[in-house]
Amino acid sequence: MKRAATLAIALAIVACGGKSAPPPQPTEEETPVTGFAWSPPCRVPVLEHNLAHGGNRFVWAYLVNVDSRGDGNLVVDLVDIDLREVNGHDATRPEDADRASLMERMLEAFPAMIVDREGAYLESEGFDEILERLIAVSPNPSVQRMIRETPAMHTPFRRQFGELWQAWVGHWIDWSIEPGADATIVETIPGPDGEAVPYRVVRSHLGVENGYARLRVVETHRGDAIKTMMLPVLVGLADQVADPAGFVELLKSFDVDGQVEISFEVETELATLRPRRGVLDKRMEFGFLGNSTNERSTREFTFDWERAIGCGE
Image (cartoon, rainbow, N blue to C red; front, side, top):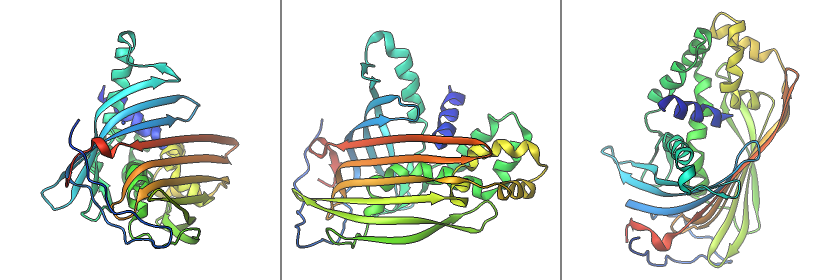
């Protein structure tokens, strides 16, 4: 079962109690300074609608659980995971129990996220152990070596493991863009050879509705940035070379046409960074080595703060 859960993580590179008091409300005229009101222990019910690659649709229910760590940071994981629907069909029926249980355990295998007291994402918990499990399921010694010895290979996994928190909280910390405005910047990620690979980021404030700010961050990756994101898939080319340096040179030798767009959107209370709704949308349209990819996945999250447990209240 651990092997199945590990493979599920790899393919992804490719879920009662007291009520919270209403927090201060932002207005159209003023963008408040952001805060982070998820004081541990904190459990928030979430309903997720997931359109996966290939067109399959899932509905998940789970609790986002926030606890303190001994180092002063916070650990965030998904607990009480329940698969509700698959492609519009009830997944809670007794005859579907085995399949639902398998899928729930796969989601449970997703690593916990470590964030600081201000809500900034730091890393995933146990990343090195997860990496070793991914290496262990590969039968190709060349692939195993490339994963271990190519640091840029780890970047897509680290980004993937933190995307949920970035969609919910991380991208909105210290938000300074006023309603109706946007800003475009260039950020970088480490490339296959350690070089800085640029990609475009557009941050937009879409306005305020009933006290909730609608915010969006869109990343656009092209060329070498796509290669970096797709390294866990491209590592299959490792059997054509003898060492990591040769693998890097092989990656540099081919072109990638098209783009990958990752959109993070939220409706949140800026004074607390408690979202009521979030969306993580990925669109991949590119071609390389005679192959083409045209896929989309969307995860939509609805938070029920009325049923949250703890969280400083």
